[in-house]
Length: 265
Image 1 (tube, one colour):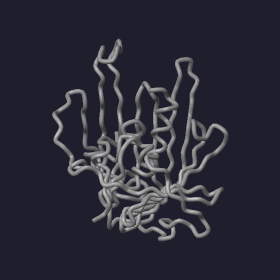
Image 2: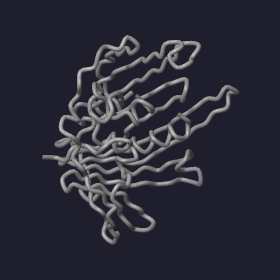
Image 3: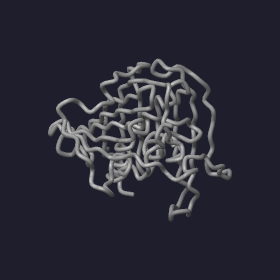
Image 4: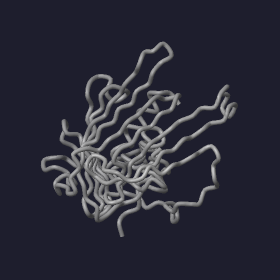
């Protein structure tokens, strides 16, 4: 995978995945974790993604990805923003991209609302004052069940215990993944590592680090965490024109390469 494509997938998925945030066992979604900072490295993919209720919060989000080239030159991309979740499982994400495919002509901001109660997701354009609405579709039965996986000798996890991270009590997990020599034409083993700190109280990842010699180093952190959320964040602002997306279009979760989480019952 080319670096630009990898970064695009990572940054598009990060805030939405974090807003729901399943535990490190299933990981908060491969887009941000496995490729970026360890959820799912962070670990588990779509099966772990779920609607979380009863755990509202608001936080600032910062992501940095750095790649060091063979000549010592470095390429760095950053994303900053805000994420929030209300008690009913609605989520809000505002992301500003600096550099990379989305920010190559200057800082670019994306705003998304995911409302499993109403059954719609929205992508907001703050310049044009428009909101693109997409219906949330229920995935096939059993898709969100975490299936038991056979032991992988090339993946080693370690419990780092609990500690306060950015003002929140979090459980740490480190993961080392090894691609054996010759598995993909590599002369030597390829080793990647991740460190993830997950809050069971908020049911989301608070911080993570991910290092892979193929794609570089990535760091994610939620800061200024508040255990509440402004209800207005989860509503399309007054004065916006709401239009339905064309059928078959790829919306917020289509870009991630995975379906949305199931609607709240």
